[in-house]
Length: 61
Image 1 (tube, helix red, strand yellow):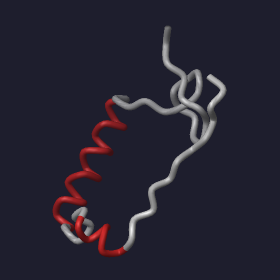
Image 2 (image 1 turned 90 degrees about the horizontal axis):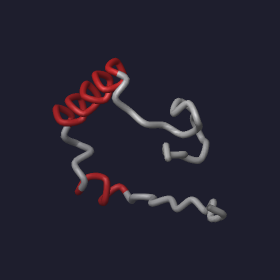
Image 3 (image 1 turned 120 degrees about the horizontal axis):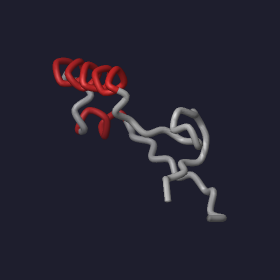
Image 4 (image 1 turned 45 degrees about the vertical axis):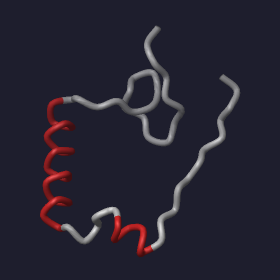
C-alpha cells in the first residue's frame, strides 16, 4: 500500500446547512451515540493498536 494521499471534502456553509448542521437535537443524539460507542470500545482507529490518531489504518489479516 503505497498510496498515502488524503482527500478532504470542505463543505460551504450552505452545504453544511443542507447536511443538517442546524439540527441541534440530532447533533446531540449523534454525539451521545459516539460517546456510547467509545465507552463500549466499539470503534476502529489507526495504528496496530487501533487507538492512534493521525496514522494510517491497518486491518487484521
